[in-house]
Length: 184
Ligand code: SF4
Image (cartoon, rainbow, N blue to C red; front, side, top):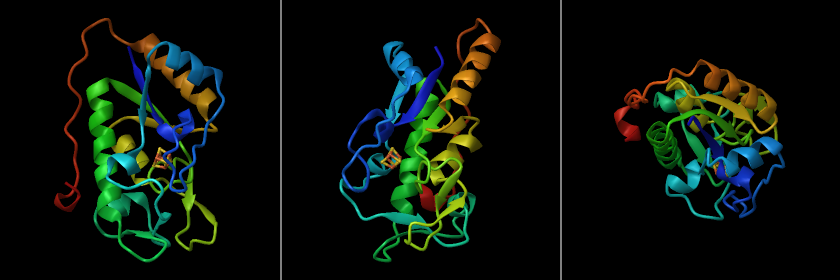
């Protein structure tokens, strides 16, 4: 069965930086849960960060790909560099996804980890800019298509297409995870 990795906060888990959840009502999420298709995951908690924690944002003008490449950082609101924890969480998300047979993900938008279409702009003023979080970017680099919580219909359509195309053979191991040495 094709699995779907889902941001834990969207499933009602209180793992967000402020200790809250971001529960999202969706018939697809309910059905996927009943089918045991969902892999819940919070990359920030799995990366070693606490609940609650200070908010963090990718540096202004930079992209998730640049964070993954080691050329820019993720900073906490007090200026502390928390890049390593975010990269650790991204790598663990990919490891969990590949081990479970995940082919797509539904992630909480605007997060420096899970953002799919937009993230905060690094100013800590609540401003949003187009871009991805580091976990979404690394999942996509490993062939796992990511959708935001506002794109669950598209995710469901993508899953149907994958199921329709799926060969009736045992699954094979996924590709190796590629990260710069500082992120390991
Ligand atoms: Fe939700 Fe992702 Fe933030 Fe965890 S890292 S709280 S799953 S948006």
